[in-house]
Image (tube, rainbow, N blue to C red; front, top):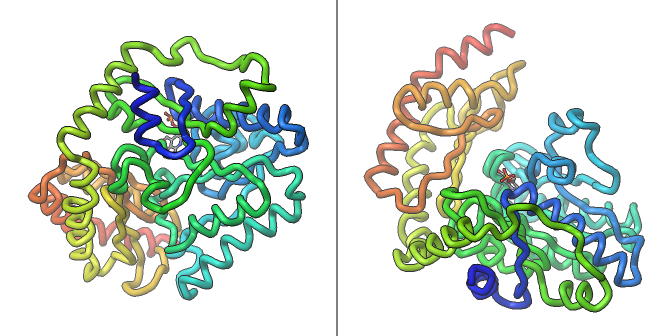
Length: 364
Ligand SMILES: Cc1ncc(COP(=O)(O)O)c(C=O)c1O
């Protein structure tokens, strides 16, 4: 029943579902399934995955290899062979003074260039998060995803959209790919599937892939003890029913998501704020040393987020500190009053953290 419900929500050709218990396991499933698919489709050389630097796809061997977090790679001798990393669409950090269209063209061109460098006949799939969550809530510029999709189609490469954070209403659509208007071939998902109450994840797979695997793939010898655990599946099914009954996806799209964006704008005048951005109910505040720039506290890059996070937590707001930003992922039922108080606490905490941040600078 859960698979049938997910197939409805995914739509199009995404009519098959493979269950696992975590996002990392879902991405391991993706890697094995995609490589096997190409093996049995008569194009066995297609084994390379292209991902982005600073992506997060999990902590298993495949997940952390697909991920582009450099500091994770030395642990366990990663990445495993066959993973290529390209630029992320992080305009604030990596294209601050660049025109948005030029930036989009540059970072997507890098994907195409890498495909040509390694040979399109060797590329299995491109994988990316609609919005990079763990990387710092990196919201891609307009047109990015459609361009990525066009490049994948041009070279016959599968498109994997990792919805572990963005699935189930976070961006104001059931899935992030629906918000960005693209059609992936595989969709790993987890977290919001059960609203985190029980561990369950899934991979939505297109019928084009499943048809080939059924015809030529033999047994798909891959699975976990808890794949499709009936208690977790029942909880997920009930969770989806509640999300639907309470209209939470439309609420994020039409009401509370736009309100969150508006509220975050109030931080724009704060001296330490370089940018406050959000999409749906995921957002970030970039901390800078000079307003109007993307300059960080010199010599201490990457330290400001945890400083501000600690002050926010002391003041009663749980946020995450990622390098020089704080990020938020509030529950889909958050109220306007709660968002107001969130933004007030952030503003207050930034002012309170300012002397510590400046002292960081004086240290260098
Ligand atoms: C986009 C994305 N993919 C995969 C994962 C890994 O999921 P898990 O921690 O359930 O293994 C995460 C976890 O945060 C994630 O954000």
